[in-house]
Length: 445
Image (cartoon, rainbow, N blue to C red; front, side, top):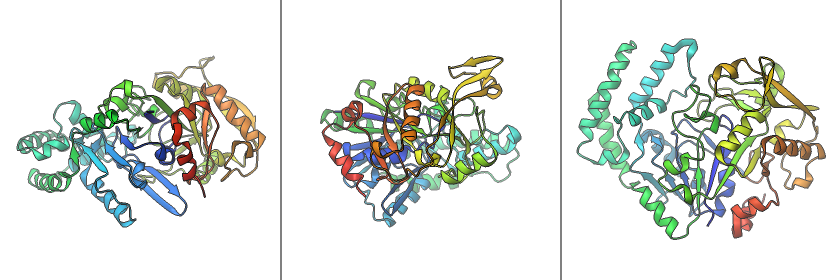
């Protein structure tokens, strides 16, 4: 048994959805452990394309079970919409999707509050997706939230009224005139309860039963380690633990049941929303990366901020998550550059920092220290073996391994599942075990 956590090591958008999707044949179930419908996972294979927000990427694999863990906040309408799109695409979800009764409910009032706060913040906006994720997590930590299981309990009405009264008071203070009403939200909750009842269960017990039966579990995070509420670039972060440690608390399995951590890194760096970004590019290099890499948010459509690979941030994330191996995505986006800078340090007040600073003020004032390597100026799209890559591209991967401190086990050379290189690495073989042939079969054109 080799249970594995897949975690993003940058500010999200690293390509975790693709990596989880291609690893699925090596596992029996996929567990999402944090976040809400502010996260977008894109899955492409052959001529099919799925954009998922709540449901794990494993849903595209027939027979694979999928779990929305207790660490998530769930907006029922977004979930129903996603289920509808999957049904239209011919993806069968009945009997395969399980929602934790301990996951928290995201209400329309949370989204209204999120939007009102961002509007009031003006230039100091965090840059949230305005989906209500932060307010839903606030309700959870202040012990005023509603869990999915609460929808099925008689006490739901009183708890809902208490939470809405708090939200209404803040919305009024922010000058919002049209505010969600208790009767309307209560009616929605009654409808949601009926539709969600077949899906909601004690997923902690379910997962422990699967572990006892020797089933292999793949844990899927949302966002990235640098957006973790404790360890990210606070306050420009998400509202949950997007690091590997969140897999245990966000699912209910013990840390001892998590055997491997695979980190996903993009071959360059992007960020959405506010906050410092050492080495952020502007002008033509940024525009090129954005166009070539399709760097627009899956959920919001917002253009992503772009920069060269940041090894300082990646080293920090690798250490923080206990990463054994790396999945490197979007190498092909760099195909046309003659030279490629890599940020290997931050210069701050005359000193070169190798460790990622916790202070946002230092991050904002620091300048990148670059190590420039030779580009390969040859198309790598769709290459299926590491040896097929141009020597300079292989050298680039080797430099990233050196700077980050972990081996690259997988290399993505395009957006589709089959455009992926699985390297012959001992660590990757331990992760995949005897199911490596099944994973390789899924990569066939």
